[in-house]
Structures are given as structure tokens and as C-alpha cells.
Length: 98
Image (cartoon, rainbow, N blue to C red; front, side):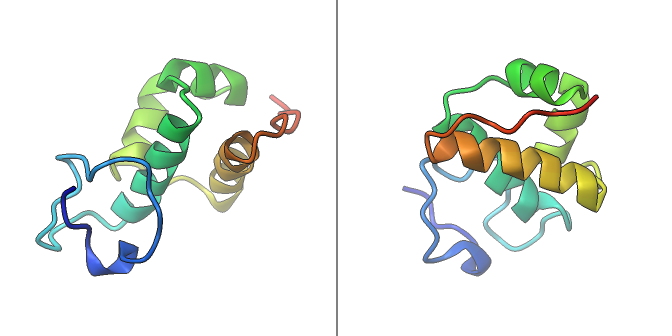
């Protein structure tokens, strides 16, 4: 398995570090959050399209968040994390308002 940045050491992720999250520390500010969201989504076996549709956001916006290219609001981050963390725990995701 590829070595993760020190900030992620000790955390359990179901996947190897993706190519867009450089191991040398040269990453975008939102990359760690994006990788966490990416990992949760993959752990739940969900596609970007499914998550985006359920959260009433575009698939391209979710991709940008996962790649650290977008700066989501605190509310949007909470919305995504509540949904994916519930799924990862095997619970029904919370109802999402448009």
C-alpha cells in the first residue's frame, strides 16, 4: 500500500492514496477533506453520480470537492459527510432537502 501523508497516518482508509493526492506534501488545501470524502464514498460502493443526485449537487462539483479543487461551504461539507458517514455505518442516510 502507498504511504499516506503524515496527517493521515493512523486513520483507516479502505483505499490506496489516489494519484491526485501527492505523497510529497505538495497538495491543495482541500485535498485531505476530498480524500476523506472519496474514501467514504468508495467504502459505501457509491458512484459520484449517485451521491450527487441524492445530495442535489452536480457530479462535477462532487468530483472537484474530492480532488481538492472546490471549496465547499461548511453546510455543504456537513451535508456530504452526514450522508456518507451514515452510509459507512450501515444506516439509512438522512433526508436531504433541496
